[in-house]
Amino acid sequence: NFGSSTVSLSPAPGADIDRPSASRSAIMSVTGAVKNYNPWKGFGFLTQSDGTDVFVHVSDCNGMAPTQTDSLTFEVELDPKSGKLKATNVQGCTGSAEAAKGGGKGKGSGGCQGTVKSYNGMKGWGFLEYNGQDVFLHVKNCNGGTPNCGDWLTFDVEDAGQGNGKLKAVNVTGCTGWPQKGKGKGDKGGYGAM
Picture 1: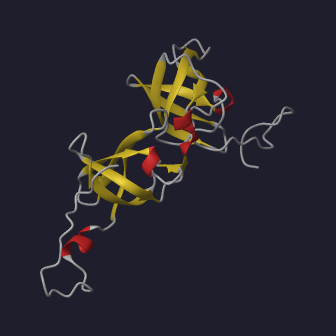
Picture 2 (picture 1 turned 120 degrees about the horizontal axis):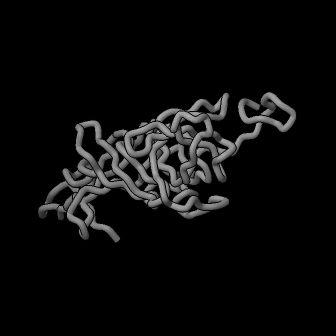
């Protein structure tokens, strides 16, 4: 059990105990946004509306996981182990908590990790940022999901085969979006809108 940063006060003799105390009003939800989150490790940081960063763990997100675009409401406590602020009872997460459980269909070699910089769900491709360069990403190379901007992915890198030294990601894991196979162009059923 983690301690709270609020202090419980006993009422003074003869005090009106039905009136809200200062400690009750101190337990308030705050709002914030995702600063960063690693779905494979299950933790990251949230930025409160006042600009203060707070640690977050997937176990405090009510069965979901935070994604880069989420607007969140949460409580802040002092973690007695680290002495730092920690978000609890996090509400508003839209990502899947399954990545932190290792529920994917496979794992990349772990040789490369990077963040999804852009992704077009209608076309099924986008780009990862890896070591300061853009790496092509196609949904057909993603195991168990579709990428979302901001996802932290594990993957292997291959030459894109265009003779220009560009790279593509293969054997990609860590995508937080739902797998989607639509009626794209071609006879094999492409990826895109359903």
